[in-house]
Image (cartoon, rainbow, N blue to C red):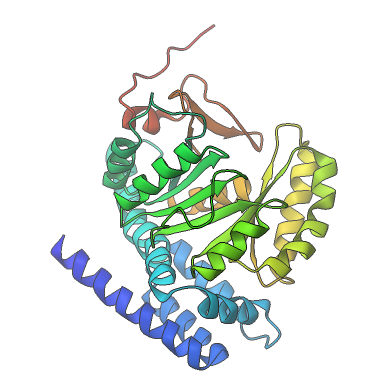
Length: 333
């Protein structure tokens, strides 16, 4: 454990120094940071990802240069370092090793991240205990949905403060984020609902906090509007945009969403994600299988089935049932 802590300290120091270099010379500093990441990468996912970024940066018109230059100007180094190291090192490196060891020893798929639905209460779930046990198994990234519920957002902030080695992406709707009243921890990225989060985005920029946007594509018609939304959001800054396929999206609509997000990564100074598709993609690389899992406020579990987040059935989300101390659901029929 001491060796891991020492290595993390070294990684944090190198990342912080690299961010300083980017402030001085964005293009050269970014290439050096990515090259360092490629050298330190040990797992299949890290090597593949860093190689992709290295190839992209060979194009001097790559939008990542604009993205990173803006981020280092608008975001505190402590926030960038803590969040970045928690995802890139703690989750995708140390966590990935632990996940694979658990699977090898127990034969159970372990998701690399968890989606927590904390909106409208959630007293039925011991969220802090869930995160603590998740870390023991190698889960260090948490997508937390709080909706417009301010109490849920405050609880999520407390959850992040209590787990400094984890990365938390807090998905927020209007009404929850009151200007000047929330101190956002360094291991958090606030993800604002697109179309209604511009005022909050300005506040987060003033406070030099990391932020992004999310948008629900309720059906196929919304998917077709996604490129227009991205054109608007590129002017709002931030790190990332997450597009979520809703239950009414058809298979064709979800395929179209994947196409739009992949093309957008080459066009916009934003990291654009197909929420469910990209979480599953990382699952397959780290865990060896698609094992997305979510937890609802009442303790029920969700999985991603047919590209949609649906209630877990018997035999699904086995590992997360164990984290929650639940017995496997009885099979029916």
